[in-house]
Every structure is written in C-alpha cells, then in structure tokens.
Length: 432
Image (cartoon, rainbow, N blue to C red; front, side):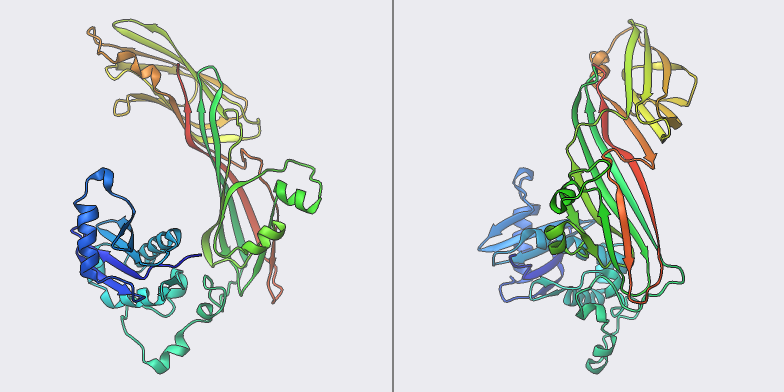
C-alpha cells in the first residue's frame, strides 16, 4: 500500500511557504521545501519540470491550484497516487470552506486550515476527507477551538466507524434515489465511413435522499457477473473495463462476486466510472463535399443522417463544418435548424434543436473568396467536422441497470429513479 505524505506544504506563486504541517519526523523544514521547490520547479526549464521528483532522499509530489502550490513530501516508500488523491481532496475541502481557494483565503483562515490538516491526516495516512463530515465539528464561521472535555461529545460517529463519508441521524420525509448513467462517445471516422477510433467513457452519478444508514445493491448487465454466476441473460451483456469506484463500494465483495454493494454518501456523488473500447458506428453521420471551388466562390453541400433508432431523439445538436479562413458573404439554405458562420472558428455552425433517429437533412452553403488566394486556403478540408449532441433515454454500450435495491433497518420504502444519457465526447468526422 505504501505511505502517505510525511508533510503537507501550501506555497505561494514565488515558492514561499504560507502554511505547512509535519506528520512524521522525516518531513523536511518548510524553508527546505521552499528552496528545493523554487530551484527544481519554478526556476527549472519547462521540459525538466516533473510532478514528482526526488532530492536528497526526499520525494516531492505537488499540484497547482489557482495561485497556490500544494506539496506533499515523504522520505519513505510513498504511494504517489494516494498522495496526489489527498492533495486534490484537500484542495476540494478548502474550497468548500473558503468558497475560493487562493493565497488570501489561506492567510485569512490559518486556524481552520490547521484544524483541517490535523483532522484529515494522521501520521501520514489520510483519515476523514469528506467535507460533509468535517463540517460537523470544524465550523469555518467560528474558528474556535473546543476544550478537551468538549471534543469527545462533538466528534460525529461517522469519524469513528467505518463509514467516514456518511453521518448518522440523517432524516428525509420522502426517501428517493436518483441514478444517472451518462456515456460520452469519443469517435474518429474517415471520410469513407470507416471508424478509426471509438471509445465509450461512462459514469454513474447518484443523488441519494435517504434516511438512516441504508445499504444499496446495484445490478448491471455485466458480462463477467453472468459468467461468474453461471446465469443466462436474455439481452445484451457488456464487459466493462477500467472500472473505478467511489470509496463507499465494498471492493472485496465486487471482486468476489461482482456485486456492487455500498452505503452511499448523502447527496450527490459519483458512484463509478468505466471505459469500453468497442466498435461503434457513428450515431450521427455527416458528409460534406465541395461542389464548386473557384478563385472567387465556394459552395458546400452537407448531409447529416441520424443512425440511431427512430424512437430516440438527439437534443441540441451542433455540427461544426470547417471553411476557408478567408471566406466571406455567407449564404445558407436548409429546411431545418439554424445556421451561422463563426469566423472565430473558421466554421459553419449548424444547430438542430432536435434530431430524430433515422432522419436525413441537407445544408447548402456558399461563400465568396478574395481573388488573391491565401496559401492555406484548401487546408480547411483537412480539418475534421465536429459534433455536439445529447441523446436522453439511450446508451451506446447497451448498459442496463437491472435492479437497485435499498435496504434500511427501519424498513421504509424508497423510490429509485434511473436515467440514461449519451453525449458526444471528442466526436470527429474527416472531410477528406
């Protein structure tokens, strides 16, 4: 597993330490960190700057946040990913407390920052890192340190038990769970329709409004689950890759029988993310051709076809078609949507509020060109067409939530709501 940071240091843009906390004896002095960081990062050549570096047997790991550098150090075999995860979590928590995390907000809140540094890490090991739990007993408004005899009473149970991300005593009049399955499609397609690259990046986002300490169980149409349990599936089973879970998920249970079991945080959080490298045909296919290109005129014909099922509708579709950088006097003809010329992007932007499945539309565009052609006038045909869209109630991968069970000792009934959304990622179609 490795060690966490032996010390955490927050530096200004000149490399001077604003505040620091040493957690183990191997933590270097703040002046040493400031000196090393200034020489090896701020004054170094750009190609030599690294997020992790070793100097005099001390490992330095750092991130930049606004006008601050947040640095973690360790002389031992530190787990770099753990350190970086903590540094980003620290920045997130401080932002919650101060609204804006910057040099002035740290200088105005030394007491609270020290309290948070003490509570969030112990002997180099991250402890409580959830803002909703920390705010129960570290109040940014009051900055008051409580007496030793009072402290035992105010520390919430969630800090001492295994569920540090959720407080006890949460109550709602109406218990509900909202689950969004969002997939982004990265796609690169050649002008002849051959898919050169396709990748699906998925995320499951939840919003839980549940009383007590509920146990949730989520079932997906996971191919490995069906294979492990010997069950048959009527529909499509998918094989998820690069799965990452929120800390609330019981990893041992998942590795054992692919069951996603967890006690959720209160409110919004990201339950899991995944990736799929799979061949996907373009959901929206666009082709363009130059019908007339002379020294004084350009005419383009653009066809857009939706290749998903008729019952689905893509919303807020934008098709960005490149044109020469010296084009002028735009003129457009289309039976649907709005078209505008965006000279800042050297593109036509064709906007369709709704694009139903299995439909095809056409756009004709003409421009005048200066009689003296620029050297790179034809370069626009080498720039790919880009698309922006969102398709609700639809997933590219075919992932399905088979069940979402909510169990709580009081026995209340809760309503789960599930939505599916597909969005564009880096979606490009080549013109040539």
